[in-house]
Length: 139
Image (cartoon, rainbow, N blue to C red; front, side, top):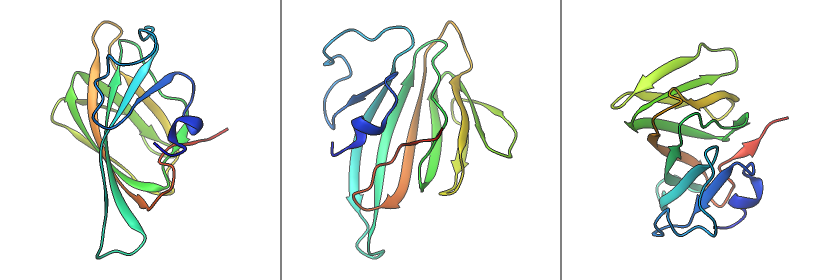
């Protein structure tokens, strides 16, 4: 999966395309987030761009570190509820069936499971530069 895993915070587990989440070397701890790549597709009518689709599983109380994507990111909540926010914007709590958008210049300051007792899962579709990492840590 290119250099993706190298740039994602250690709290995240990356599951390669087509691999079930259970095929990790150790069982995930309560704070682990599982990111599963679903597909990547070059956009032939937009040179240099591709779409990446991933799912993210937050365990109860799970949260992302501050990061950005350098991409258009479209989020759709599949299960549970999550809290999302970007620098300069308001935090929003989303439940299953709701959406969120992050632009290429947004810094994702809040990304967490809204529940301490139930897991949450969401789909992210990113339109990004071909071959570049989708997750960029911010200090």
